[in-house]
Image (cartoon, rainbow, N blue to C red):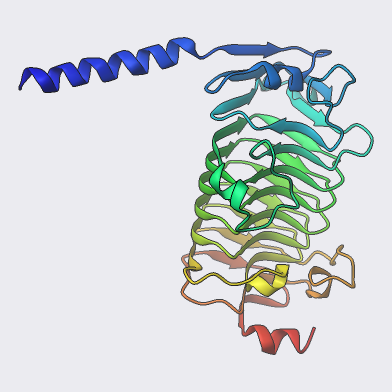
Length: 321
């Protein structure tokens, strides 16, 4: 082995060690502000939150943020809720809204809002690099529970999100993500929605009590495996972009739905009856609507009273609903 190569290895190891050494852990206890800890953190830091109920906006929060419960724009930040098993609700890290807050946890570049669309030049060129959240219970927000937007390399793991107005867990316009072992439930739209994203794995989640349990549209390379999807109006929906008013993309597709349990999706539709979602009939396990070049295989699909797996063209379906 030549000396130059050895020198490069040593230099690389020293760089990694220095990066790890600089990362800090910010601890948050009940009565303190999670947002203040987020605002004080540097890239690579960890926010470690003790069990308790956190009403997220306070007048002394540096972000002065009334729209989102927690707003993350720092790269590679790790949010970890320190869940204590065996203590029930007392062992959870619960995020609850202050008046008027729309989304519980929102990760995106600093200047990018939910209104910034696919292809926005500034947001696309300044994507947030790295986001990790684990162990949070996020409920009762007006819009969404946990949302990423314009984020690369994200992990949403072992959280609970639900009882929200739109989507419980919502990775959108994001890439290279893992959504694993979460519970998503109780919405008026979709419990878990992968939208306009690419290279996302959705594995081992518990998804229930929504008009649509798990939805994918306008995305590339999405793998859906080992999820329990039940008690929704429609269990799994692979939808044409028009379902959300979006434009198709040339490389859209390669969605793999494999080895999931999709059962008892017979919920009377709770969505606004004038909406697209509100027109969906109950009792559908898996619905492919106006899409192609995808794989649905080796799933257990049971007790969905209208149809187990349905495949329809967009024009045919929308002429009847």
